[in-house]
Amino acid sequence: MSVKAIIYVLVTILVIWAMDCININGIFKKNKIAQARLFYLFLAFSLVYLVTNFIWDFYLATKFY
Image (cartoon, rainbow, N blue to C red; front, side):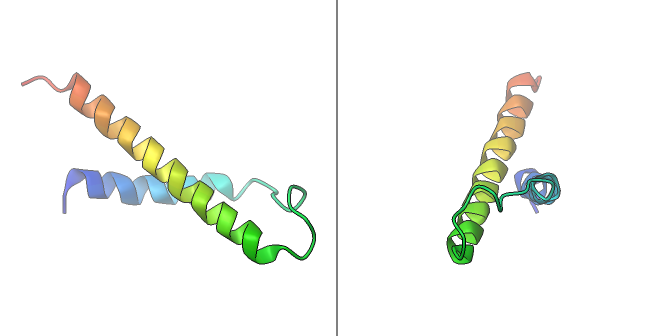
């Protein structure tokens, strides 16, 4: 398993844990549960991608050969 895959797994756990504290019920219209869940999923995927790539790029930028 590559290092980047391990970072993806760890960041996914952290993002889901962090997003658990957000109350998104007040943002969406009533009876729009499927759309709210899809938005939450896309938001989580986006955050995982951005944070993982930031960590990976920071690691590569500070790596001494």
